[in-house]
Length: 243
Image (tube, rainbow, N blue to C red; front, side, top):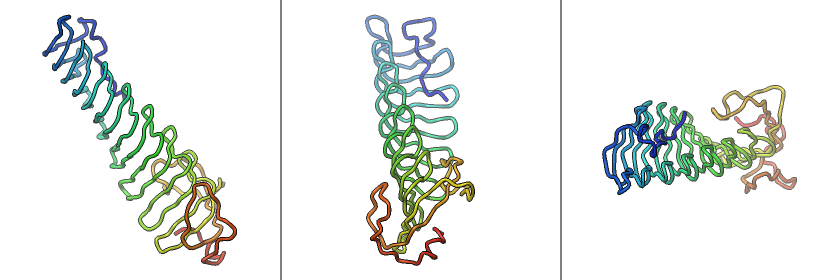
């Protein structure tokens, strides 16, 4: 849905609606005031030379609400937007768009805490799955998990590279009992893991190909298991894959 304000006609009095508050010498809205727009939206807060500027609260007739900073009629700075579906974004805005650092809380209780660009998850961030308690921590591009990242579960984690929300290529499972299973994810024609990667997963069919089990090692994104690493279990045990 749109979260842009509707009061775009401050120089056209026939479209301004009702207003109570301060004005400057030119008769423009200036200082603190309250406006009721023709479409039913309301704004209460600061104005400067006829435009929303400074702190204010904009209430949409559909139930949405924005509380935060404005600059020249646009959301700019720090602010919180409450959406009709129960979701909420709290963080940085640039020209009416989520940009910079912010926290988005989704209707199902999931949260994303990280960087944004042009309304989309972009940069470093952590997505927390409310139902399972699992997390994804890593890089995002155009709203999707990309490049280096890790899935953190209650008793193990997966560390590797991601492409379009899915693990792909070399990586490893790290278990709390003190061992790791190295291998890689490849595209396959079978064994789809439904829901394993949460709601952000695509429909790509992936298969985990185990290589060896070792003690704990230092992880470098994209680095494959070296031939010199000592295996802590037989190849037969490695073939069983993560539990």
